[in-house]
Length: 219
Image: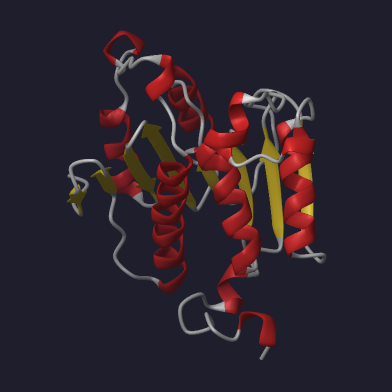
């Protein structure tokens, strides 16, 4: 047994996770944490997709380092992932997601635009074993998983128009703790998938009100 993963071996089966290649699309408040958590639990391959650079507003809300200012988000996050696990195979894509991109069998969608989510899902839904969409607004989060026929049919019901999207003030859009928690919920569903356990298809959490709503059904 690899001592590195000795405290999680009954939770995250090594023989399953070693077959996974993860693509994380959007390396912001949620996606950065997803990438770091996937690396820490032992995924062998990860692909980071984002076109943005680190700005000063990303330090508090997304957990980037002061020295990361002006760097590509994919490069800054890849460097930290390599520090967590030197044996990780990591690929960076400094660009927007394109349908032609060769992706892994696991996709974590962490973008901040509803139309982009729709585009991504349409492109990958029949190519991946597990898809999870992490959404966040201030202190509210949502994690939606698609992993079988019924959940793939359910996911499009969660797509609304851009006009229906919540538009809060720019000073109340993102918190690092909400991003971390959203990533944790996404990873929880991923590890349930690895263990063959029932997956919570649609989780919504309001941290401010201490409310959680879980949809186990996909009908």
